[in-house]
Length: 352
Image (cartoon, rainbow, N blue to C red; front, side, top):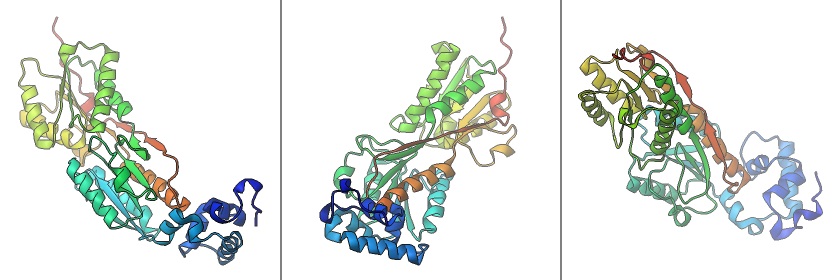
């Protein structure tokens, strides 16, 4: 065993789980597993940890806030996502579940549907169930209410979107860089008239993607009159109507950038109805089902939802293993440009 240094604060109330781990020569995660009687800890190691706990007199009253949480875990997580019916959210959910199941932890999932009231109701329900931790996608203007609603000992990780007025772990895609990449890609084929189809501007990811789009527009020096932004598209049907309207203009766009997968589907429906899917360029943010089987295939900047979910789960379980919330961390997950044909359509030749 490793002796405690003089800076550890001595015995009794100042002893922490970190002190126990250092004294036993193991990681915090191992101490947590021993305390919780979890499997996969060698008997000799478990005995060493228990001996350190006894020698250091680490008791519930000595580390009440963290140890109470450790000893009363429900082995469950609350996960709030945009919509479990959306393939993007479903993949995040599955990635979290794949990690949780190996730790004998159940996952309770709920859909946000981008309604602030559902955000509050779902999180309140999770807290009443006394889940061990939360992985959240948020839409409310502020998450300051979490300070009063969620116990300080309950770890929180935000996935896909950044919270407001609340500090916690965040895992999200490179939204600005991805939208900039998509827009640069279509503009690089010579387009001078382009439209952005955008989700609701009160959603953080929509604002981030609009920023990336505008940065690319500025780089290419396009005139403002040749750029159209259609925002607040709530679903595929709204996107379809928007594209039908855009293509009916005297000077319609020759390229469309879609900022969300359901919006991309609506744009595809409209272009195919009009017979314009082979002469209007289209690139979407996030992949869509069967995109490679379309004619032409749908070009996208694809997110990595499996990686988003896995990183969010990793952050959460690291805090649970430590027995306390760790300092807030941020993980930005890269995106991937997939060129399949629709984003590489060139504009018609410009007449002098």
